[in-house]
Amino acid sequence: MSIYKEISAMQAEMCAWRQYLHQFPETAYEEFNTAQFISEKLLSFGLEVHQGLAITGVVASLSNGTSNKKIALRADMDALFIQEKNELSYKSQNAGKMHACGHDGHSAMLLGAAKYLATHTDFDGTVYFIFQPAEEGRAGAKQMIDEGLFDLFPADSVFGLHNFPDTPQGHFAIKSGAMMASFDCFEIELSGQASHAAMPHQGNDVLVAAAQIINALQTIVSRNVDPADAAVLSITQIHGGNTWNAIPDSVLIRGTYRCFTQATQQLIQARLIKITESLAQGFDLTAKININPENSGYPVTRNTPEETAIAIAVAQAVVGVDKVELQPVPSMGAEDFAFMLQEKPGCYVWLGNGSSDGGCLLHNPHYDFNDEILTVGASYWVKLVERVLRS
Image (cartoon, rainbow, N blue to C red; front, side, top):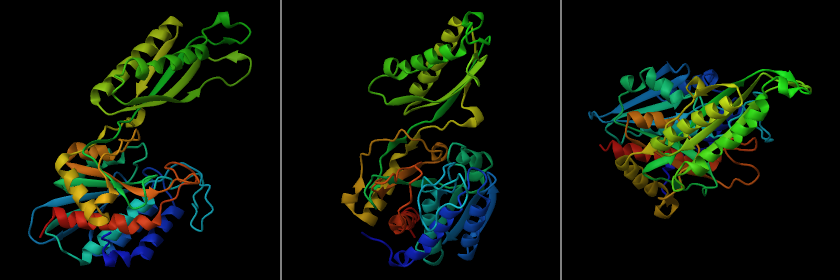
């Protein structure tokens, strides 16, 4: 393993940063303390810092030499609406909020790389350090792009990294093409005539209809999507009624679907709409269907070949050839880094967080980032910059 000795010496400092961020988690577009903490560190390293993209986004710039080459490195900052169940000295102090996905660790690793590169300028060009808000379902990457991210910071390529439980500690997983699935949400509101529970014939039972629609939607993947093409559709919420003896006049169904191609994405959406409208009509109900409320959809996270080859070579240089998985199974999870990859060539990699024993899974109240991989991630970022911006 080739970890920079100066970065190894920063282990305790990066750990302190990470645990501070873990202790004070902030959710989408409210990462004000997190952004201020990160900005102050970056300024202390001597970097130029820009704040305010997507409300709380932070971008730092570092240039050396005369080359016009530019690379962007991205870390996410936001936490989740989860009540932490760990008993740690740095346990979340913000009720109902938790860094249950490791964004605290991602930010600490990128800060470590920024600090190293500020004083070890073995590169020729410009590095942009992007600290992004609102990855968790609120499309902070898209918001930053819409507000001019790549106009202000015109990177040639962009790279992302995410920790991954049950991938061995300090190992990488990288592949070209689809790495993470698309993410689409849907909301179905059924409306009809309410009635007494003892006299259902006087109304239209939206709950019975909802049950039929939920069952029918499960046939989309099993009977419409090619079995060789991975996809999933899940119902995650149903809301309706508020008493024992009345059938309500409306019910709300919410869910998500994920896949790896635009064609499958369009197929699922079309079938979802047709099935819902047809069944609603059969029950004499009105159906209102909303796809991706609040702009919640994410495209497929798709790595480009040239940048993936660079990421593989860098990861192998850091941890060894035998610790880089080149054919990982793409995840049905989604990432709004996908929006950045629609704008720029780049690569998104997984860094092993180690065993998930004890509930150390992403989005789990017992999750915790593995501080032992901080030096691995920071070294990967540094070596990537030195490889892409060769002096």
